[in-house]
Image (cartoon, rainbow, N blue to C red; front, side, top):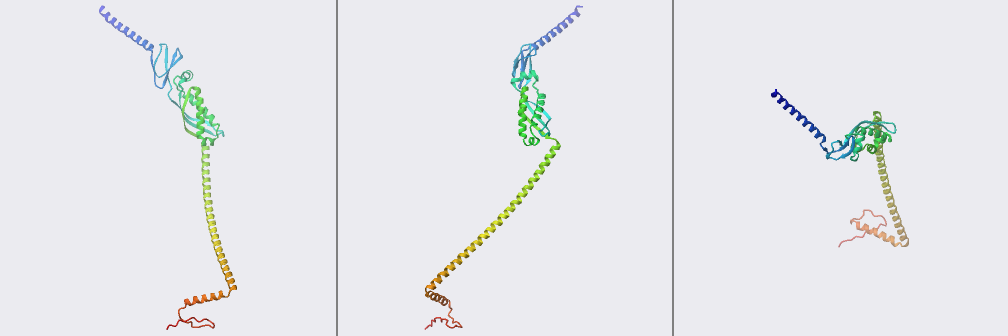
Length: 299
Protein backbone atom coordinates (compact mmCIF):
# COMPACT_ATOMS: atom_id res chain seq x y z
CA UNK A 1 0.00 0.00 0.00
CA UNK A 2 2.76 2.45 0.76
CA UNK A 3 4.50 1.69 -2.54
CA UNK A 4 1.37 2.69 -4.51
CA UNK A 5 0.71 5.93 -2.56
CA UNK A 6 4.12 7.54 -3.22
CA UNK A 7 3.79 7.83 -6.99
CA UNK A 8 0.30 9.25 -6.62
CA UNK A 9 1.50 11.88 -4.17
CA UNK A 10 4.40 12.88 -6.46
CA UNK A 11 2.02 13.23 -9.40
CA UNK A 12 -0.30 15.37 -7.31
CA UNK A 13 2.52 17.64 -6.24
CA UNK A 14 3.54 18.09 -9.89
CA UNK A 15 0.04 19.08 -10.87
CA UNK A 16 -0.11 21.48 -7.95
CA UNK A 17 3.11 23.23 -8.91
CA UNK A 18 1.98 23.42 -12.54
CA UNK A 19 -1.28 25.07 -11.54
CA UNK A 20 0.61 27.51 -9.32
CA UNK A 21 2.97 28.38 -12.17
CA UNK A 22 0.09 29.01 -14.58
CA UNK A 23 -1.65 31.20 -12.04
CA UNK A 24 1.51 33.16 -11.38
CA UNK A 25 2.04 33.58 -15.11
CA UNK A 26 -1.48 34.87 -15.57
CA UNK A 27 -1.06 37.24 -12.66
CA UNK A 28 2.27 38.41 -14.00
CA UNK A 29 0.83 39.04 -17.43
CA UNK A 30 -2.14 40.86 -16.00
CA UNK A 31 0.01 43.14 -13.87
CA UNK A 32 2.83 43.52 -16.41
CA UNK A 33 3.26 47.31 -16.59
CA UNK A 34 4.98 47.61 -19.96
CA UNK A 35 3.06 48.15 -23.20
CA UNK A 36 4.04 49.22 -26.71
CA UNK A 37 2.34 51.75 -29.01
CA UNK A 38 3.04 51.05 -32.74
CA UNK A 39 4.23 53.67 -35.21
CA UNK A 40 1.37 55.69 -36.69
CA UNK A 41 -0.80 55.13 -33.63
CA UNK A 42 -1.67 56.55 -30.28
CA UNK A 43 -2.42 54.64 -27.09
CA UNK A 44 -5.65 55.50 -25.31
CA UNK A 45 -5.27 54.76 -21.59
CA UNK A 46 -8.48 53.99 -19.70
CA UNK A 47 -9.01 53.45 -16.02
CA UNK A 48 -12.16 51.48 -15.27
CA UNK A 49 -13.51 52.58 -18.66
CA UNK A 50 -12.63 56.28 -18.33
CA UNK A 51 -10.01 57.90 -20.57
CA UNK A 52 -7.17 58.99 -18.36
CA UNK A 53 -4.37 59.58 -20.86
CA UNK A 54 -3.00 59.37 -24.39
CA UNK A 55 0.33 57.66 -24.99
CA UNK A 56 2.59 58.46 -27.95
CA UNK A 57 4.41 55.89 -30.06
CA UNK A 58 6.83 53.69 -28.14
CA UNK A 59 6.90 52.30 -24.62
CA UNK A 60 4.01 52.94 -22.24
CA UNK A 61 4.03 52.01 -18.53
CA UNK A 62 0.63 51.29 -16.97
CA UNK A 63 -0.76 50.40 -13.61
CA UNK A 64 -2.37 47.00 -13.32
CA UNK A 65 -5.85 48.53 -13.27
CA UNK A 66 -5.29 50.51 -16.44
CA UNK A 67 -5.97 49.42 -20.02
CA UNK A 68 -4.34 50.53 -23.28
CA UNK A 69 -6.23 50.68 -26.61
CA UNK A 70 -4.28 51.23 -29.82
CA UNK A 71 -5.80 54.04 -31.90
CA UNK A 72 -4.65 54.58 -35.53
CA UNK A 73 -3.81 58.07 -36.76
CA UNK A 74 -2.60 56.86 -40.17
CA UNK A 75 -4.16 58.14 -43.36
CA UNK A 76 -7.37 56.29 -44.12
CA UNK A 77 -9.58 56.42 -47.18
CA UNK A 78 -13.27 56.24 -47.88
CA UNK A 79 -14.62 55.38 -51.35
CA UNK A 80 -17.90 57.05 -52.22
CA UNK A 81 -19.62 55.47 -55.22
CA UNK A 82 -22.33 57.23 -57.25
CA UNK A 83 -23.20 59.98 -54.81
CA UNK A 84 -26.28 61.69 -56.21
CA UNK A 85 -27.12 65.34 -56.45
CA UNK A 86 -29.13 67.81 -58.50
CA UNK A 87 -28.11 71.03 -60.23
CA UNK A 88 -29.85 74.38 -59.89
CA UNK A 89 -31.59 73.67 -63.21
CA UNK A 90 -32.83 70.29 -61.88
CA UNK A 91 -30.42 68.08 -63.81
CA UNK A 92 -29.51 64.89 -61.92
CA UNK A 93 -25.79 64.35 -61.47
CA UNK A 94 -23.62 61.61 -59.96
CA UNK A 95 -20.09 61.50 -58.67
CA UNK A 96 -17.64 58.88 -57.41
CA UNK A 97 -14.88 60.08 -55.11
CA UNK A 98 -12.09 58.85 -52.91
CA UNK A 99 -11.53 60.86 -49.74
CA UNK A 100 -8.29 60.41 -47.81
CA UNK A 101 -8.31 61.60 -44.23
CA UNK A 102 -6.58 61.20 -40.86
CA UNK A 103 -7.53 61.80 -37.24
CA UNK A 104 -6.13 64.99 -35.75
CA UNK A 105 -3.60 64.00 -33.09
CA UNK A 106 -4.98 66.50 -30.59
CA UNK A 107 -8.49 65.06 -30.89
CA UNK A 108 -7.80 61.35 -30.44
CA UNK A 109 -9.54 61.19 -27.07
CA UNK A 110 -12.64 62.96 -28.45
CA UNK A 111 -12.91 60.65 -31.46
CA UNK A 112 -12.30 57.56 -29.30
CA UNK A 113 -15.02 58.61 -26.89
CA UNK A 114 -17.65 59.71 -29.44
CA UNK A 115 -17.10 58.04 -32.80
CA UNK A 116 -14.57 55.22 -33.12
CA UNK A 117 -12.24 53.13 -30.94
CA UNK A 118 -9.75 52.50 -33.77
CA UNK A 119 -9.77 55.69 -35.88
CA UNK A 120 -12.00 54.39 -38.68
CA UNK A 121 -14.45 57.14 -39.67
CA UNK A 122 -15.23 55.89 -43.17
CA UNK A 123 -18.98 55.68 -42.54
CA UNK A 124 -19.05 59.27 -41.28
CA UNK A 125 -16.92 60.43 -44.23
CA UNK A 126 -19.25 58.80 -46.77
CA UNK A 127 -22.34 60.36 -45.23
CA UNK A 128 -20.72 63.79 -44.97
CA UNK A 129 -19.43 63.64 -48.57
CA UNK A 130 -22.87 62.85 -49.97
CA UNK A 131 -24.44 65.71 -48.00
CA UNK A 132 -21.74 68.15 -49.15
CA UNK A 133 -22.02 67.04 -52.78
CA UNK A 134 -25.77 67.65 -52.82
CA UNK A 135 -25.37 71.08 -51.23
CA UNK A 136 -22.61 72.21 -53.62
CA UNK A 137 -24.16 70.95 -56.88
CA UNK A 138 -27.43 72.70 -56.02
CA UNK A 139 -25.59 76.03 -56.36
CA UNK A 140 -24.54 75.43 -59.98
CA UNK A 141 -26.35 74.84 -63.23
CA UNK A 142 -25.41 71.83 -65.35
CA UNK A 143 -23.36 73.88 -67.86
CA UNK A 144 -21.51 75.54 -64.96
CA UNK A 145 -20.65 72.17 -63.42
CA UNK A 146 -19.14 71.11 -66.73
CA UNK A 147 -17.34 74.37 -67.49
CA UNK A 148 -16.17 75.13 -63.94
CA UNK A 149 -15.29 71.68 -62.66
CA UNK A 150 -12.14 72.85 -60.87
CA UNK A 151 -14.13 75.48 -58.96
CA UNK A 152 -16.81 72.91 -58.06
CA UNK A 153 -14.15 70.47 -56.82
CA UNK A 154 -12.61 73.24 -54.69
CA UNK A 155 -16.01 74.09 -53.17
CA UNK A 156 -16.62 70.43 -52.34
CA UNK A 157 -13.19 70.16 -50.71
CA UNK A 158 -13.68 73.25 -48.53
CA UNK A 159 -17.16 72.21 -47.43
CA UNK A 160 -16.03 68.64 -46.68
CA UNK A 161 -13.06 69.83 -44.61
CA UNK A 162 -15.38 71.97 -42.51
CA UNK A 163 -17.83 69.07 -42.14
CA UNK A 164 -15.28 66.41 -41.16
CA UNK A 165 -13.54 68.71 -38.70
CA UNK A 166 -16.63 68.22 -36.53
CA UNK A 167 -15.64 64.55 -36.24
CA UNK A 168 -11.99 65.31 -35.49
CA UNK A 169 -10.80 64.31 -38.98
CA UNK A 170 -8.49 66.21 -41.35
CA UNK A 171 -9.01 65.86 -45.12
CA UNK A 172 -5.73 65.05 -46.88
CA UNK A 173 -7.01 65.09 -50.46
CA UNK A 174 -10.03 64.33 -52.60
CA UNK A 175 -9.96 62.42 -55.89
CA UNK A 176 -13.03 62.93 -58.06
CA UNK A 177 -12.97 59.74 -60.12
CA UNK A 178 -16.11 60.30 -62.20
CA UNK A 179 -18.60 63.07 -62.73
CA UNK A 180 -21.60 62.30 -64.92
CA UNK A 181 -25.07 63.46 -65.92
CA UNK A 182 -27.99 61.46 -67.27
CA UNK A 183 -27.59 59.88 -70.71
CA UNK A 184 -30.32 62.10 -72.18
CA UNK A 185 -28.56 65.26 -71.05
CA UNK A 186 -25.15 64.05 -72.23
CA UNK A 187 -26.61 63.21 -75.67
CA UNK A 188 -28.06 66.71 -75.84
CA UNK A 189 -24.69 68.20 -74.88
CA UNK A 190 -22.89 66.17 -77.53
CA UNK A 191 -25.41 67.26 -80.17
CA UNK A 192 -24.98 70.88 -79.16
CA UNK A 193 -21.20 70.57 -79.38
CA UNK A 194 -21.49 69.01 -82.83
CA UNK A 195 -23.75 71.80 -84.08
CA UNK A 196 -21.43 74.42 -82.60
CA UNK A 197 -18.46 72.88 -84.37
CA UNK A 198 -20.36 72.88 -87.67
CA UNK A 199 -21.35 76.51 -87.13
CA UNK A 200 -17.77 77.52 -86.39
CA UNK A 201 -16.60 75.62 -89.47
CA UNK A 202 -19.11 77.48 -91.65
CA UNK A 203 -18.11 80.82 -90.14
CA UNK A 204 -14.44 80.11 -90.75
CA UNK A 205 -15.16 79.16 -94.35
CA UNK A 206 -17.19 82.36 -94.83
CA UNK A 207 -14.37 84.41 -93.33
CA UNK A 208 -11.91 82.75 -95.72
CA UNK A 209 -14.09 83.56 -98.74
CA UNK A 210 -14.56 87.15 -97.56
CA UNK A 211 -10.83 87.52 -97.08
CA UNK A 212 -10.16 86.20 -100.59
CA UNK A 213 -12.73 88.60 -102.07
CA UNK A 214 -11.23 91.52 -100.17
CA UNK A 215 -7.81 90.56 -101.44
CA UNK A 216 -9.04 90.47 -105.03
CA UNK A 217 -10.74 93.85 -104.62
CA UNK A 218 -7.55 95.29 -103.15
CA UNK A 219 -5.49 93.96 -106.06
CA UNK A 220 -7.97 95.38 -108.59
CA UNK A 221 -8.01 98.74 -106.86
CA UNK A 222 -4.22 98.78 -106.80
CA UNK A 223 -4.04 97.97 -110.49
CA UNK A 224 -6.63 100.66 -111.29
CA UNK A 225 -4.71 103.17 -109.21
CA UNK A 226 -1.51 102.26 -111.02
CA UNK A 227 -3.21 102.65 -114.39
CA UNK A 228 -4.62 106.02 -113.39
CA UNK A 229 -1.24 107.13 -112.16
CA UNK A 230 0.40 106.03 -115.41
CA UNK A 231 -2.23 107.82 -117.50
CA UNK A 232 -1.94 110.93 -115.37
CA UNK A 233 1.82 110.82 -115.79
CA UNK A 234 1.65 110.47 -119.57
CA UNK A 235 -0.94 113.24 -119.82
CA UNK A 236 1.20 115.45 -117.66
CA UNK A 237 4.28 114.68 -119.75
CA UNK A 238 2.38 115.40 -123.00
CA UNK A 239 1.09 118.61 -121.51
CA UNK A 240 4.58 119.66 -120.59
CA UNK A 241 5.87 118.80 -124.08
CA UNK A 242 3.05 120.70 -125.75
CA UNK A 243 3.62 123.66 -123.46
CA UNK A 244 7.33 123.62 -124.24
CA UNK A 245 6.67 123.43 -127.98
CA UNK A 246 4.17 126.29 -127.78
CA UNK A 247 6.65 128.36 -125.81
CA UNK A 248 9.32 127.60 -128.43
CA UNK A 249 7.02 128.67 -131.24
CA UNK A 250 6.22 131.83 -129.38
CA UNK A 251 9.92 132.57 -129.03
CA UNK A 252 10.54 131.85 -132.71
CA UNK A 253 7.62 133.97 -133.82
CA UNK A 254 8.80 136.77 -131.62
CA UNK A 255 12.29 136.47 -133.04
CA UNK A 256 10.96 136.44 -136.62
CA UNK A 257 8.85 139.42 -135.92
CA UNK A 258 11.83 141.31 -134.59
CA UNK A 259 14.34 140.40 -137.30
CA UNK A 260 14.14 138.75 -140.75
CA UNK A 261 17.80 137.83 -140.42
CA UNK A 262 16.81 135.00 -138.16
CA UNK A 263 14.78 133.39 -140.96
CA UNK A 264 17.67 133.78 -143.37
CA UNK A 265 20.01 132.27 -140.80
CA UNK A 266 17.67 129.35 -140.42
CA UNK A 267 17.58 128.84 -144.19
CA UNK A 268 21.36 128.92 -144.38
CA UNK A 269 21.55 126.31 -141.60
CA UNK A 270 19.19 124.06 -143.55
CA UNK A 271 21.23 124.46 -146.74
CA UNK A 272 24.41 123.76 -144.84
CA UNK A 273 22.94 120.58 -143.44
CA UNK A 274 21.93 119.48 -146.94
CA UNK A 275 25.40 120.30 -148.28
CA UNK A 276 27.01 118.19 -145.55
CA UNK A 277 24.81 115.28 -146.50
CA UNK A 278 25.35 115.71 -150.34
CA UNK A 279 27.09 112.75 -151.95
CA UNK A 280 28.60 114.80 -154.87
CA UNK A 281 26.01 113.91 -157.44
CA UNK A 282 24.04 116.63 -159.16
CA UNK A 283 20.34 116.32 -159.02
CA UNK A 284 18.72 115.11 -162.18
CA UNK A 285 16.07 117.82 -162.01
CA UNK A 286 16.38 121.32 -160.66
CA UNK A 287 13.35 123.43 -160.18
CA UNK A 288 13.36 127.06 -161.03
CA UNK A 289 14.90 129.30 -158.46
CA UNK A 290 16.55 126.37 -156.58
CA UNK A 291 20.08 127.16 -155.41
CA UNK A 292 22.93 125.46 -157.20
CA UNK A 293 25.42 123.78 -154.91
CA UNK A 294 29.01 124.94 -155.03
CA UNK A 295 31.33 122.72 -157.06
CA UNK A 296 34.85 122.14 -156.02
CA UNK A 297 36.61 121.56 -159.41
CA UNK A 298 39.96 120.06 -158.92
CA UNK A 299 42.99 121.36 -160.86
